[in-house]
Structure formats: C-alpha cells, structure tokens
Length: 388
Image (cartoon, rainbow, N blue to C red; front, top):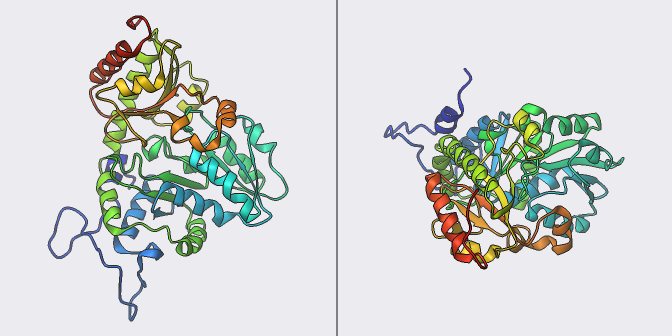
C-alpha cells in the first residue's frame, strides 16, 4: 500500500523494540558483531549496522528508490558517488551552478585522478548535450541550485543521459524528498546533504545517496574503502529528525513563499531569487517537477545597504554557516559556501558580493519580517527604509 510522506517519515525503517516494546527504534552502539553463524557480517564501515540499514530503508522509501546509504557528510556522499562511476580517462558534464564544495572538489581533485570534466554554459538541456564526449560517463545536476535557486529540467536531463548511456546524478538537498523526487523523472542517483532538511535542527552532519540496488552496490564497493560511514548515535538522531521532516518542510515552504513575496515587493530589495515567485525564470518548470518550492531563497539589497552590516543587525534571524534548520538563517555565499571557487567564476555565475542566502525556518513570518525591517532601518545609509 502506498504511504504518504509523513507516514514514511514516521514509520518506514523503524527498528521494532521486541524486548521492551519502546515507541522508538532502539540504538545499537556496538562496533563489533559476531561473524560465526550469522547472515550478515556487520561492521560500521560496511554501512550495515542495524541502525544504518534501517535508516537507509527510510531514505530509499522517501526518494522512491530501491536502496540507499548514509554517509558522514554531504560531501562524502557526493565524492563517493562520483568516483564510483568515474575512472582515469573518463569525462563528466556538470551543471555550472552548483554548491561551492562540489565545484571545488571537481576543480581540485579530478585532475589527480585523470578525470576530465566540463561545466555547462547554462541550464538549457542542449547546454548539457553539447558538452558530451565519447568518454563521458556521468551528468551531474543540482536543482534548485545553491545559491541562486536555478531550476534544471529533470525529465530532459534524464532523457539525455539515457540516450547517451550515461549515469545521471542530482544533488537534491535544497528541495528535500518532500518537495522533489528526481527518480520519478528518470534521474538515477539522488544525493543529499542530510545535514540540512533531513537533520533539520542544525545538530547533525550526514549525507545520503539513493538509487537502484545495482548502483548502490557499486557505490558501496568504493564507500567501504573510503570509510565515510556515520556513527550509529548520529544515525539514530537522524532517524528521529526525519520523522518530522514532512511537517517541518511544508511549514518552511509556506513561510518562504510569504517572505519571498514580501521581499520581492520591498523598495529596498534589489532582487529576489525564489522559484515560487512568478517572475522567477524557472517558475513554470519548477511547478511541473516540485511538490513545493522549498524554504531556500537568496536576495540582494539595493545600493544603500551593506549586506554584511545588514546581517549583523538581524536579531532573530541568525547569521550562520549552514541552512535548513527550524531556525531562520542567512549567510554570504562569497564568504562561505562559494568562497573557494574564486571571484571571477562567482561573477560568471551571477553570485555577487552582496548576495544573501536566506534559509527560512518555522517561526511566525510576521516576526521574521519585523526583524528584517528593524535591520534595514538600522543600517541604511541616510534614511529609513520603507515598503511599497
């Protein structure tokens, strides 16, 4: 029987407490298990402890996949997945607008492995197909992208990958499984920084990958050697957090839509990047492949403001390094998530020094607006900001 998102979040992948009948999964902290007369030789680095396997089932169900794995971080999930399908002499096509950590990993590490790569010129599916070579093996995308919330056509990319016999991969972090299920559109490998919406409370660092059993076996064979597994205590905490992901993300969707409309109409805001706005270039496409527009956006203040001073003036909204917690946060991508890719490439991608990435939490939207207003009034050069 098909289950709804909140039911999957709450119940799939539970470990039943047969001894004490507790309501939550028991935590198995052992790092050493029997090897004689057992069906599974369990070891944390093999991603097969009871808690690891149970949570993987939940994530696979959330992403409509056959199997999944949990990693120690989002970058562990990304790097392991890429290297599992690429070797010396191979080539990969990647979307240009990516999380800075992914961009930096490719630029700094792939040459050491003899892997060639090209970033697309844009988001049109033809931009991807034009970069494909005889030795291309993988297409990698991210939608909505970090930090400009660009939207890439999942169905078109999946068809291009299948046409050329390539593996299609996506970083689905910004959307979360609540808002987007790329496997339904033909994408093969779905990756998450589980630190973000899956964790949701800014207290867990983890990554996740979901795909077919065949693909996951290939990823596992490399993963067990690289050692990017996650401790069972963190796995247990992540399972607890995912139970509320559906209701958290839906609340963040609603708040973000409200805040995006407010910012877009504000006389002191130069530009807002949010796929839920009708004026967003990817709005119509996003409506066809997303169940909700997400809790992430970016915006630019007009020339009367210093973005750094504005963020310091916020009192309720926190200026922090990460995103997707229940609390609202902001950061400057040029100083954090995209600091390593260099000023020239950031300019090419449209990431200005004044860009502010806004992760909308579950607070009352009126309180968030009041905080933004007081910060604008505090830091404007010359006069007090007003709204339309």
